[in-house]
Length: 361
Image (cartoon, rainbow, N blue to C red):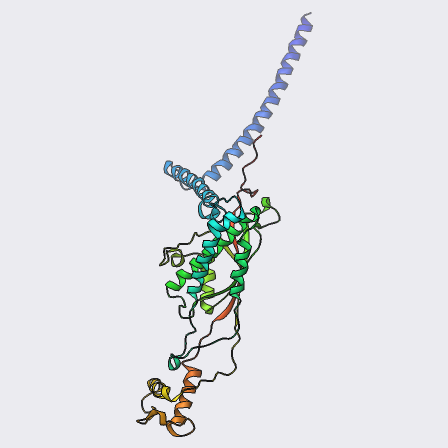
């Protein structure tokens, strides 16, 4: 029994030695890993010259709050105000006839008068300011207004909103033109509207969920100075104070989004030769104006009776030559160009899937 106890004591003691060796090995391994981790952390900490202060945290918090506020402002800008103005605040009518009587008839007459007022007589050269430029043919605008009035006289109920959108686009277009002309943008040539065509109000993409905008495409044909056409297209798409202010009659743009797809200008038909017949009664006035254009020492010697000037010889012939030169080089007839635009009036689509709120469960 004593030997057994000794053996058991030896076994227990031996087991304790083995366990101690294992724990010692584990301790050495864990300590080595911790020391390496501490060294790495100490090296990383040395990279930073200073620890972030409370003020830094406050600035970061403020920026985060501002970011959220900016997102909210952007969402409000898209879902309210001018972004949805094209498709908002229309009057409801019980029938097409009521729409024409209460709204369309008066608005069409107003728009027709406003566009007619933008047309200006063809400006003539200084030498021929009492003459007039007569162009044959019909521009086609009368047919446009006749058809528009016919379409809106008694439309089906489902078409009323479509025609209200047409009127809103035309009013916005007219107001923009009026503002630009009042601020001196090519006022000498004016603006002549030839026609406007409209397509259906539809999504900008394949479906409403894929479309950030709902659009009504429309096309404009008009006559104006080339520079006016460029300025007008820019103001329609990117409005500035020049076109957003009130007109002399108190009209003001709504400012709904308009997108430009195409702008094209082309020369109108130009006559190859223009003949000016200056009668005896106009010879004195034309000779005076030619002399005003000529430099010293080059003036026409006008006789006491200007009617005696012979266009085939002497001072009369010189008058014809100098007048022809002036009219071809410095005092020319400026004609407008024909302008074509393809645009889209837009309203932000609140059902667009990118910004639409998830359905409630």
